[in-house]
Structure formats: C-alpha cells, structure tokens
Length: 430
Ligand SMILES: Cc1cc2nc3c(=O)[nH]c(=O)nc-3n(C[C@H](O)[C@H](O)[C@H](O)COP(=O)(O)OP(=O)(O)OC[C@H]3O[C@@H](n4cnc5c(N)ncnc54)[C@H](O)[C@@H]3O)c2cc1C
Image (cartoon, rainbow, N blue to C red; front, side, top):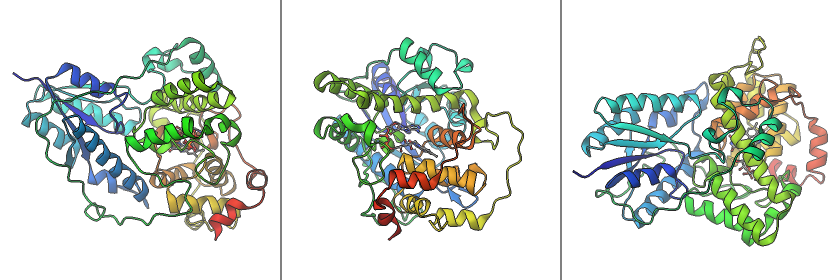
C-alpha cells in the first residue's frame, strides 16, 4: 500500500530549509501539501480589531500562491482548504488514507492549542501528527538550558547560546515531490473573504510581495547585490526607504525564508567579503527574534496579561477610546508619532525606531493599556508575529524581559536625532 503523508503548511510557506516537508517526503511514498484558510480566524474581531488586517492578508495570499507554483514545478501542488482546520484536515486525511500529518511546532498559545486539538482529532482515525521546529535559528532542544531556566535577561541568553550552541545547517531543497493529482489552486479573492483590497501606497519603504522567491531575492539583494549589510549597524535606525534595514520581517513572519537560511547566507557573505560589526549585528537581531520565541514558550499566556511576567498586581487603566483613536489615525498632535502611525495605517509597516516610539508614547504618555496597542499592531503589521510583537510591547511596558523595566522614550529628542531635517515627518504628514 502506498504510504501517504500530509504536510500542513502554516507560517512556513517555503520549500527551502523546511524539515517538516523533508521528513514527510522521506517517510512516505506520496505527500499531499495543504494550506487551510480559516475565514473565521481571518475575520475574528477582538473589540474593534481584526486579527489579520488587509496588508497581511494580501501578503499571505501572495505567499500561498507562490508556494503552490513552486510545488507544481516539483511535480506536486498545494491543496487549499477553506474552513476550520480541525474539520477540514481530518477529512483530507481520511480521503487519502494518510498515515501522518506533518506540521510546524508552535510557540504561541492559540496555535499550540490548535496543534494539540489536531493531534486528538486525527488520532480518532489512527492518523499520527508530528511537529517540527522550523522558525528559529537555534533549536530549543540544542539550548544549553531547559525551557524553565531560560534567562530572563537577553544578554545572558545570547552570551550562553553563542558560546555553547551550534546553529544547524539548512536542509536541502527537495528535488522532486510525488503527490496524487492536486487540483489547480483556487485562491479566494479579497471580496470572497469579505474584504476590500487596499491601494498600494507609493510612499512605503518597499513594495512588499509575499512568497519564497521574493524573500530569497531580497536576501540576495541585501547581501550580495547591494552590500547594504556591510553598513547595517549604522543604518538600522533609519526611517525612510528600502535600504536602511533588511526588511526581511514579513517574509520571516510567514516563513517564506528561514532564519537559518539568512544566517547561512550571511556566513557565506562574510567568507567572501569579510565580516564586520554590521554583518554580525543582523545575526544579533535574529537572536532577539529567537529569544522572544523561547520566552513565549516559557511564559505562555502571561505575555498577553496586563502585568506580563512582572509579578506586579496592577489594574489596567480604563481605556480612553478617543485618545486611542487619535493614536491609530495619526492625530495625536505629536508630529513624529503621527507620521509613524500614518505609515503603519497606510502600508502595514513601520521601522523598529518608529515602533519603539509609538509604543512608548501609547504606554507612558497616553497611559493606556499596552495590550490595546499590541492588538492594533497585530491587525496592521504585515510582519506580525505573536512572540516578537507581544514580547516587544511587554518589554516596553516594563512587564516583560527588561532589566531596566519600562522604557520611556523622549519623543522630541528621538525625532531630532533620527529625523533631523523632517524628511520622514514631511513624507507622512502630507
Ligand atoms: C512594539 C514593537 C512591536 C514589534 N512587532 C513585531 C512583529 O510583530 N513582528 C516582527 O517581526 N517584529 C516586530 N518588532 C521588531 C522589529 O521592529 C521588526 O522586526 C523590524 O522593524 C522589522 O524590520 P527589518 O526586517 O528591516 O528589521 P532588521 O533591522 O533588518 O532586523 C532583521 C531581523 O531581525 C529581527 N528583529 C529585529 N529587531 C527585532 C526585535 N526588536 N524583536 C524581534 N526581532 C527583531 C526581525 O526578524 C528582523 O526582520 C516589533 C518591535 C516593537 C518595538
């Protein structure tokens, strides 16, 4: 009997360095790659916030389409399911008599629960469920400490992992995939998903397009074509244009590129053109990304709570909806904050410098519940990922992993330092 396995793609929309896919190919005679769009999750409202905003949705649909194209080049294709994955995936497992479903291991609570429930549902028909960690640089199992002992201070974490843990090599791309005939991809349109596609905003830092090919092109551009990586440490606090930072985040968030692939390419670059502080600094930032993931694994739902992991017992302030609305729509009256919030609302992206300032303003000057700001970012950001977003917000609110506890930025000084001739503010306040 032919052994069949299902690969459930989620935020790992790529063929390269994808252990989930490789293991499924190795262990089966044929595989069925699937993606499940859950309309309820797309449109789930949390107060006045959608879970997946229009920019992120567009990027996601593009990434799915490209994954299908790339799979077809290898003899397979992506089977698109629309509905609740807990119902749709077991149906497909039954239809194809699949023996195992392979999927990405999750860290955030909702996604983790979904995996647990999926395993239970599949087991009802004796189908196994197996997870692989595919999003971090370091594997949790390779860390020099157990999950409960992960240091609460980033520097302590980084120093030990850099010294004691190897980053594993990337998995090779599959050369050929055997699958049953997969029907042509029929992606739902924005309208079918109850949305209206937004106009592209020419002032944005990049015309982001989802997909593995675009991710690898951007990686190649940032390193080997433009050599921008050589100056990353000096430019990374910029605000205008595509070149001040890598802009890898939307592709990383959707798994169109793996963090390990970026690391491997940086190492190649360093071997050819030399290493400097900047080439290292991009790796340093990817370690931050890992850190927030591991901290999420350790503290789970606490990072969604007002007091975070601080142990404080403070009561959240009553929301001032008109202040919050002004913040969202770029009408606070503080020109640096307003410019950043306009960029976010109109493009789905904001620089790291901008994010720190608008979050600090929301928490410390507007004195609002940081979780409302984090939820708005969740809706808007094209690169939203639970660990990086909630981890950074909690950090700035002083209830996360910050030894200095609660960072209040001097917004006027920040504007002067990072936007000295008003280039950024002129761009986004016009
Ligand atoms: C309040 C707040 C919310 C944030 N929400 C998100 C989010 O939802 N998704 C997200 O990917 N990043 C988030 N970040 C981190 C950071 O702002 C973005 O990763 C970065 O701006 C993306 O641009 P880039 O790819 O050009 O980054 P680069 O400066 O080129 O950095 C390279 C990569 O390193 C990682 N990285 C850099 N800075 C951080 C950081 N502070 N925390 C975690 N990873 C980092 C990212 O994966 C990034 O793509 C947030 C930061 C703040 C202050």
